[in-house]
Length: 240
Image (cartoon, rainbow, N blue to C red; front, side):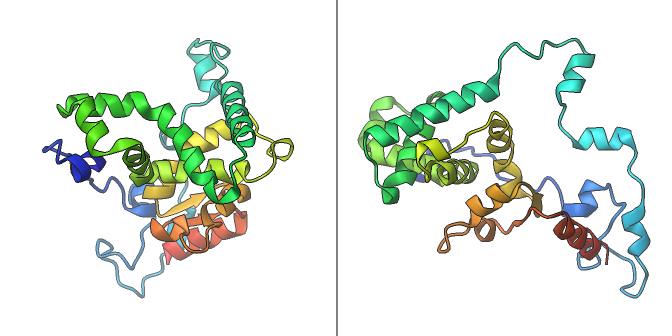
């Protein structure tokens, strides 16, 4: 869609579709929200018991991503590629480049977006080729600035780069990148854009709500929470 908006191609863009409807979808109808049209029960009917309906382990595993224990059970090597460490090394190199170029705080986001473009350039090239758009046309029509604008127009990349910028705001010795950050930066963008509620670490909630003029949680209408008490409140509210 980003290419079509700027270059008129591809013409057969797949329209976005809703793939879930909040907690009712998540629990296969086990928990309903009376404010939604699909809930046909009377408003006076007690729904508090719904939230206590047990979710068996098999269903839970369908919702959760496969982790190291799952990989180990099926015999996959866990040390083939240490993506977390590679991610830390990459962000450290980006921080070194930012420091070397003495990029001011106000220009930090464009610098991070530029590094992000380098990461996803192969994917963009594939989509450009599939749409029968030549590299010359891209260069003449968009230029370097236009290519970065394409990256910034992608909702999930907006989240990705907001998460990354939140750490690059600090001097290198205080950034404290961790291997586990790789999991968050890779997996948070999609739910942060498309889900109703996201429960994550406080540092990431702050990262996505840091810009008072453009809070990403408000832009994507996603409730971001980091305290267990908040999660309980959300679940109780959804069951009423």
